[in-house]
Image (cartoon, rainbow, N blue to C red):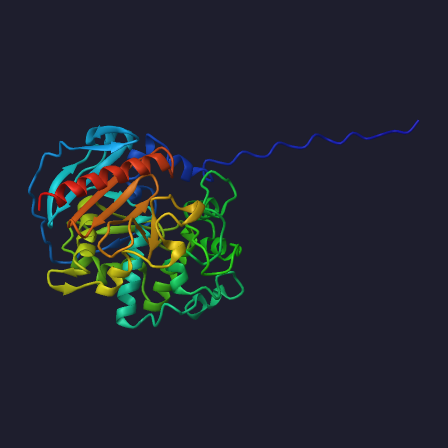
Length: 396
């Protein structure tokens, strides 16, 4: 008789700890209503000082009784806010606040909101300023021209132009519900104390650079690191001195920082500011980068952010990582092909900075969606924002 030894049953995989899952917990409703307005209570931060000059925004309140059409039915703005979990809503026309509403449990005019990937559009503005100052030479500069430690990574030869248009070809499809995806590893490293730089360096090339759009938080994070390397200062300090202090903002903004040292801001997603101050950024974009007679962001850089003539960045051509009603340009989402069409900054969970230069309308919508992405909620939001913009365009 031959004896046999039974193999022990394989152990079940250890469930992730609270520490590893904190990103998921902080972004889950109803907790997110609190966390999206109190990130400075939860993470290390660096302040973006507003400076000495304060310019109050004039107000001309309007009742917005209009309806918008979505999926064959008419809806009110009250329904929009209910359907899309609005927390803050500011509408500006001709530089005046014409409508303001804060349905969020913890929101208000002085509350700083977690803006997620609206931060990417802020980083783009800072890159434009740095180029005008000459501390960044060219959009054709490579990542390793500023960050030698990226030598040997898939990012080493990627150019600033490719990062700005998210055509680096590096990284997988951004999927928040896939446990080991690049974006989940990025989130866990940022919030849980991991090495964020190593996460980005480990991303693999999927396609050649410059040929296809793939929405990438990693691309935007590399842009922020390039800016810090080029300027020799932190993202928050540069933003304060070159941008925020010129806006006449109500409050200091802030970036939350990674837990691990050396701590770093997420130029891709950790900027926090009041809804009114975000609206001031929109005014900057409608006025070709000028604030109170001062050219803060180069005019050509603002125009570059409003649209692109590159075919694979056109509206409807972005592929699986962009909704069909968007194009992309310079870390902004475009809604048309000309520099006078509406465009928007976007953040997960429903953050919007919507700018319509032709109508001279700026709309800020902060939200607490139950999931990071929601194509239907996004389509409904854009339908409503377009309707509001059209309303004011007709009343000029």
